[in-house]
Length: 174
Image (cartoon, rainbow, N blue to C red; front, side):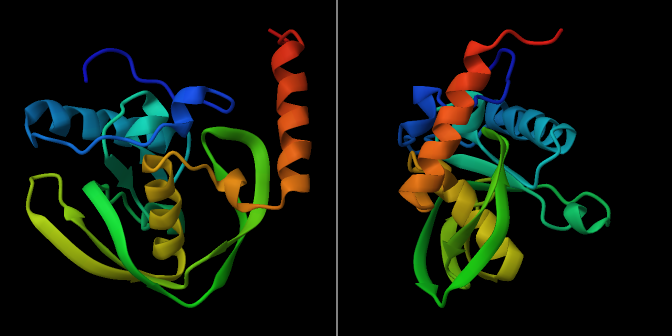
């Protein structure tokens, strides 16, 4: 997990690959979690899955406290999975660091129960609702090879894909 990390963006095919479980929670993983946290804060974002920086392993970082203007509280989840979900909420203007220049409303579960491990390999099982539930669903989707644009109407998705292809074809301004 060494080397330069950078955020991969749509249409990078790597983003569509499901991740493999983390086998060892070790110093290399700790270092990568810190580096991903730095990238997430600089972007700026509220969550970042390993697949988004080119690592095909099942872990993510997030911070739902910092987005409210409070101090940083970097959290990490290793091998997370949603074991229960209830209710429905519309995540308004959801965006993604891997899907530049696009936001859309996305239907998500209001409440989730998540299992996994913390950054030290200790088992976790916790409930999340509201904004935290949306962030975790979004990031866990990444670990399963799914982008938020896979959850919107096919028309909106096609419009974004055309716009993105055009962006990638045109020469940059600098």
